[in-house]
Length: 109
Length: 163
Figure 1 (cartoon, rainbow over the protein chains, first blue to last red):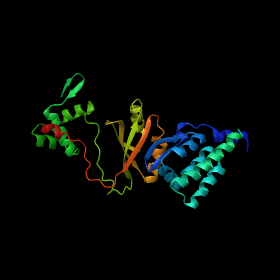
Figure 2 (figure 1 turned 135 degrees about the horizontal axis):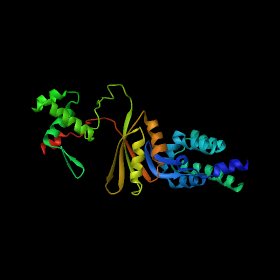
Figure 3 (figure 1 turned 135 degrees about the vertical axis):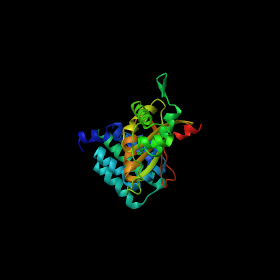
Figure 4 (figure 1 turned 180 degrees about the vertical axis):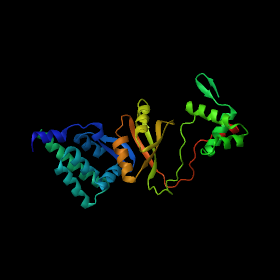
């Protein structure tokens, strides 16, 4: 993995590119993540309903693919869907995947 | 029609003409004059003055969107905002074609109430996620989708005539 790709994934995004957490259509929680680090933290903080909402729609992998162009992480998150996780179990698996990726990238940065 | 401190004061004749126009904006000056017992030239002069002063803003058609075949959805957004940013958020919302009405309100918190139209639930969500949530000062949003309309009416000037 090259330095350019690392810095792209670990950068802080402008407001319009951040991830905004909703619990259902049109219901914004007030939480947002403007970097992968913030995203890791928010997975632990936000209402699990919000994680379930976005997970079921494929919003997480779509955002990670489009904004960070991190296909590897996007595929890994999408792979969780087949396992039909929900609630705290979903939160834990999601957190582990994204935190591991963040840790891996920040070590080589 | 008189002016007091740069505001326009309407007399009872103006109010009666406005009421007649709100009931049917397509009726002629003669028809309005006949129903109110005044000359059509008086009706014409009063209407022209009220147009010039922006009291009559436009003449428009009220369309039954459902009967016209429109499949759009309507939602009411309640946007909780940082009080310092509230006006800016409201002004930004006004610029979006999806927004039909915008109001600010002060209950326990300062909030903005906006009526929004979208093609479907997905486009509603995309609009709110991409264009409303990122606005500086937006703290959180609650959205209710309208499922059935029982009444929709513009404020009637006739209310002022009664008082």
